[in-house]
Image (cartoon, rainbow over all chains, first blue to last red):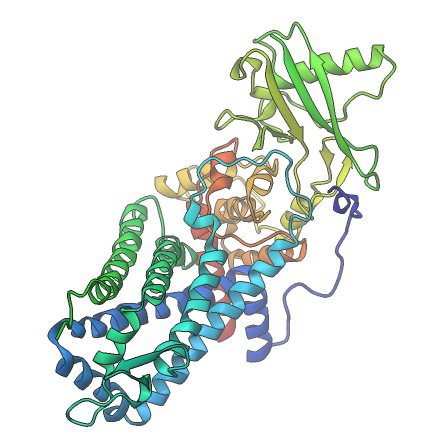
Length: 260
Length: 250
């Protein structure tokens, strides 16, 4: 340690701090380059992704209504939406990339802000969730990739029907639609997959209990008066997402759903 | 009281630096932490050794000089207290105490516990001037300031620029310092003409100095000897967003 404390005393005297040129592009670069501006975009993206997580969970709860309800819903999303599906997918991907790239860029810069750490680290009121945002974020991000590979592309695992292994994407129900219900059952009946999903849900929960109130603070909406409400909203949203998703995975895993 | 001190010793900015352990006997619990260091230094001088360099000035908790990390906490374990106002009675007899300088890229260490905090001055400088009416003294009460705004401005103005927020922040961010300065003037009528430009300039300078970004951890607020709240950071964010959007459509 201690080599970086040998840093030179800097007296930054460079170009004008705020670009005087009036163009939308310089404005955007200045905004995204500032730590608060980048955070605002990360927070907006985070809110968007959290909203998606809520609706994703609500839609998936259809599994409790039986195979027909879930498969109809899946068919609606994939075929009845038409071009809107690609708009939604593209939008989600864009939001996801903005959120991840800008957050990691901030983290990268900040990692350089303290080259030499303390020999005796201490903290007073830092919550675990606050200190592990990057870690939980990376876990959730990797999980999303796994989740896509698992259910969207069917690369990870195969379903067993009448002693034969069938690709997830070739499963068909009585109406000839993609049998999402059987696919979910095949997935979550496999212990390691179910365990992985549950673990990821905990990571998402921890990410959200700090992320949601943090977004409000970044927008400047948090004050002594609204603090409790905003914290509560964070716990509530994160809790509802956790509860719904965990319920789906455990219900399938323990055989409460679909033991026909 | 008897204490064992592990103090960061570094001869110069280019020196490697290391911890040196000193045992100190007959420390009075009524001594301030700095008086205890004075006592150590007197002994070191008598032994012909180099005394520990540390910054101090007013010793009454208002100048913000006495920057040091004591057992991992900026200004030590007492809340809302500077190192000079921290007393040895806050430690148990026979305590092991680690004393380190502030650690941040923007605060290069000069010697022992002394670091260069002029980055904070440059942030204030970047804010520029504040327009003030000169000429005859204005009539009393002709410049109304609401009580709530007054309170907020005064809370923010308590900042003594000690840098404890930077030292305590896991991201080495000076956002609480910056927020206190921005929020202080944002609540007063004198600060209004340059309000939007000021927040953008000061934030740009903050980032440029190599401080980290704020991830709403709240350690700064716990370390601040003036107990400045992180709600001022929300004020800063609000002002920055408004200023940026206004500069776009202007």
